[in-house]
Image (cartoon, rainbow, N blue to C red):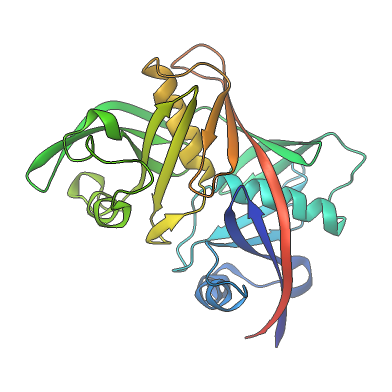
Length: 282
């Protein structure tokens, strides 16, 4: 069987996208399919996740989106994936260009979306959890960060304020080695965590993310950008809206609506791009 796969970029976050109205694949099959699709569908290498777009199952939404990591794990939110899914659905006619606001159901949660001048803004509900000043031991030294859950868990670290990282540059340090140790740290068991390393500089936040399920650094991470913006703002390191420079050097913008720390809405904005379209055999 051949499957039509669209490759998309959300600020450098690369996804394989399937229109499931045609195939009607169930979740168990998609979990098994995700590793193959992510590894085989892109001419330049492995994608960073599989997005599955479908008719809404709820009368209050315009679109159903499911996300699968390259290892087949699922159930988490993906911010840039949500933005790409909206762009894909507009392109395929699943949602109408006549509407200004869209509601998508993603990981059993509703998110709002707006399409403006080739950029898609995704509105998140309030954070599930914010834990500041969390200390864990890595390589015999203490790393302090903050744990944030905006539909996907993140441990957010300012590299300038930690002994293990304060002497390194944001673009050159060993994110794979340190990210993996933190991702699997006992503090975050049993599900583990994504890990965000950042520095505030020249009015922007420079960000690199190690993503669980990908088990590597990704070109960008939407939930990581939102989580990092929250912590940087609460630490008085940035104003609003927050501009974040991803490892792909694309810009993501995060705005935080409401009184800190009880934000009523989180808004992630950035570009999406269609890269290529391929057929793969399954």
